[in-house]
Image (cartoon, rainbow, N blue to C red; front, top):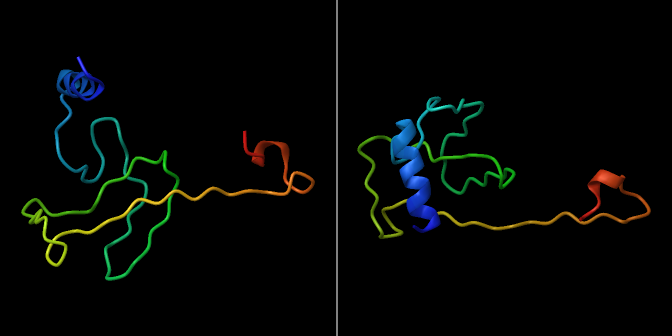
Length: 91
């Protein structure tokens, strides 16, 4: 069984629902919210559980002129070893 199928089976076993998270539930608590706005950039740690704030009737159109267009980027902070603290140094 692949990793995705295994995770899906575990979700079903605990009663987790598929789709976008909305608010708190199933062991997770919503601690922040950023409403969508044209040309808005939201930056957060990659290990933070996140989900779009989408209504139940959202049109998941593959057309980028109508649908939700997102991008994932990875930024790495580098520090001067002489100046940064031990826990800030890249491992």
